Length: 251
Length: 264
Image (cartoon, helix red, strand yellow):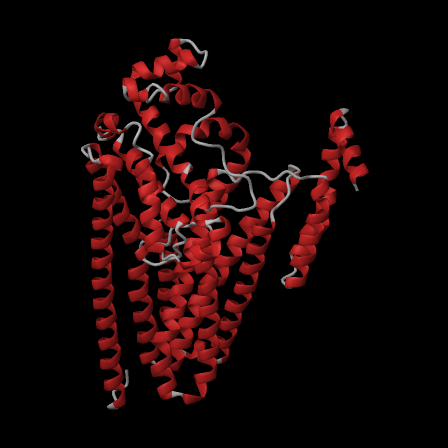
């Protein structure tokens, strides 16, 4: 191992760097392919692979100001979103369960997953010293109102609300994951390695996105499409979500 | 729309990255207090580059005698082996000297806090409540002013110039955030803002008090700081209790209505 390292050092000194640079993307390509699987195991393999290549490329690039701002706003908006989701389910549960007791396990399952996501982002925000959104009280009131209002309108309306929210959130997580993967790709093309921290973040985002999309499926299974008028409800809620995402990324 | 713009910004950032490293020193002044703090990527370049740091650290030694002035800067440049004219590297003039003081003293807090709360006493430090840590660290930071405290009113006057107020407040916000981070505060709700805002106010007023404090070891400043922190935690506790009572009563009211058969 140490002999390969000294060989690498020699190559770098003796000016054969271009070959090394040229090979770098090929070395890293398998990692990327592993990462595109959602399973935790895939991510773990990718981490092992990157750990093996540590010897050759110990260099990590400092995050630029734009990248740090992107990560801050991403974590901030995710925390705000999960807070809102938790509150929506909290407010929906009593009227819904009152009218349709058979939905109790489903509501509890969805609430527990959202509460888990909120914990994840709360700890990430505290760990990475990201400012929480200043509109926190506004989102709390609006989300509670939205959840309670749709639940009072009936089961279909509540499910349509879930459908609309989870559609927007799923798209939003996908955009974040795509942006992060492009960041990784650029680093790898330049010959830098990606830290475990950000790889784990992508893994977390993937897991959470899949769970959110699972909620979307549950909502559609439970007659979300039968809400009257479906297009108006989902249209308004989705526009509201986009507005909230836009604002939370900034404020 | 918004995420795609963020994405475009990110890509552009990657392309600009090499030349941005040098130019970033001054442009970072007006960013919002906090951005993502990474644990496994190297930290971004510091506020000052090597030449600026050399001049400023030499000039800082002249501050007790000559104050936060252009004169101290020229003396510092001469000491560091630069021409007098090289102080034009620092367009903000005396303010960069003030900023140097603020930044270096803030950055010195992290190792100091590791010394106080880390080491063999680490297990014990876990038990120290966040408020006590905040008080200790704020006091440590105030004590860092002792060498320049007789010049600090001039510095406050410079910092209060309208064009410099945003940068000064930014530094204050960074200090409050640093103290709460080092104290292990994990709040991620609106109290994040209220805690930092009240600590910033308390710190600024304690600093002002300190400029007129002639007591040995600044004992009166310490007492002042302790009183202010106690008051603010008292107000915080009252507000917290009121909020808890209101939410409990509201929830109980809703549940009573539900038990009466109201469909809410």
